[in-house]
Image (tube, rainbow, N blue to C red):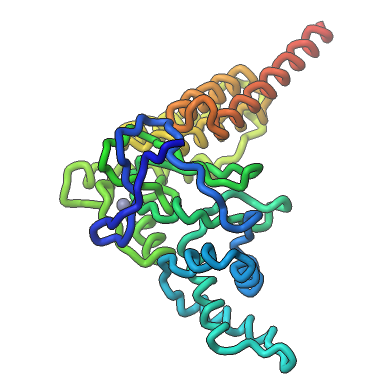
Length: 328
Ligand SMILES: [Zn+2]
């Protein structure tokens, strides 16, 4: 694949990734290798992480240790305690090694991409991809990433059309949150203040975004706080559909379509499926596929995953129809 992006200085943000030519939406921008052979657990022991860093080839290790990071003092304290606990007389760890291990841990915190959950669902999995990690954040990003577990790669897709010379951005945090929460999450996790179009209250869009995202957050909280209601099993009405519809409209007005929209449709589809309301579940899954094709293309992993789930729903619907036919 010819490279359609370059890494260069981004004013005020260190380095950034920029489009070298026009990139239509749903284009696969990069498929970046994870430097660790398997994804690592975020909450994993920092010493284990450092062992993994030491196992990297020298040039890759040098690139890793060169990545931007902020020193999280509290975390480093915990790390030092952990390291000290392992520091027996026989295998003493030198101060310089401890410092580098602490740095490795801080780099991981600042640069790792969360790529899913461990098999037991207890911890988050993360990867480090050296090119993708140069992408800066926007609360209204023009790109998004997907984890390709089999290939151990991070695929980055254009969420919207990207002009030549435009910076390619992703969202480091969940963008369906109020401005206040986003500011907090970016400050704590990444130690910077976002100045993207959605955060800039000096513009009309920024001020509209302020209220839209607060409403998005409220809609989503209402949906997650209202699990499937058993009383509704037999009816083809779900009060949460109203929230979903409002949320979708808000996302479209905000220009925040893409993977988040796919997730929302998918969640609603699951709610219907849990009540054996298959036609409604299928309709929502089809919406999820439509949204996925627009941001990840026909061949994207997200789209393929949604199509598989659609097939499963259709099989369930056919089974249910057969059973009903058998009863009558
Ligand atoms: Zn922002």
